[in-house]
Length: 314
Image (cartoon, rainbow, N blue to C red; front, side, top):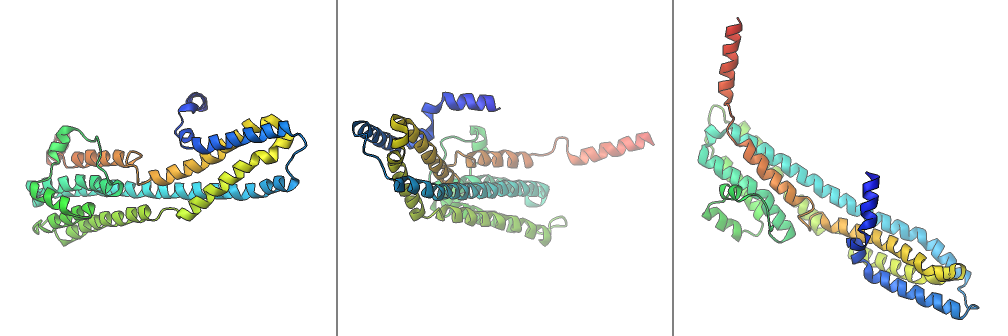
């Protein structure tokens, strides 16, 4: 609620990550505003011209547009990454149900390898994007159940694009399933289409990771914001006096905080797995393992029980 959010935000303001990241420009502006205020007190006749005040008024709108555009573009990037991983979760669920439906045609050893590769896909993709493994994850029992064989694991470690290699192995396992009355080319092509979609998601994530906001845009915005905040006390000291110090500190905290939030949103999408990739990786493993678990009671037993009940009623 608003009450709890307001209380926790005010209570933890000194522990704010945004405040810690902007402390350097905040201290610089504070020091500058103190010097300007003391100079004004020592020399009352010295004051800034109206042109400087007008400059801040004119450039304030442009600065606001730069900050808002940066934050919106960063959030759109974050949301697109989240949608890609939602599709990854859905395709892995679909493939888990698919291999469970045709486990008799595929055979238990191939089903086990397929499930191991399918559960390894999101973890490989996360490491491919973040560049480092997870420190924690699923339970030890699940890790033992999903442990890949040594030949596949060795080939996976040699691969330069591990999630793409997992897709390759998934397609190879699917190709080796023999033709049967219940498993024809139609089912094989349907599953291959879903595996190709997993391959497409790798390229989509790489595109987002390799296409950040241009560095020149970020640097120009930071320089613009720094100069605007540093010269703000000179414009306000004539009308505010010593109050210019807390006012400029507050304005600097607001504007640099908005910039820092935009930077955080931009880099947390696919650079930090703790935001949503770790959670979705665990969810893929849980859902796939549940999808391939044999039904209890079996479906054929339920159909037999239903037919017996219908005969009893008749």
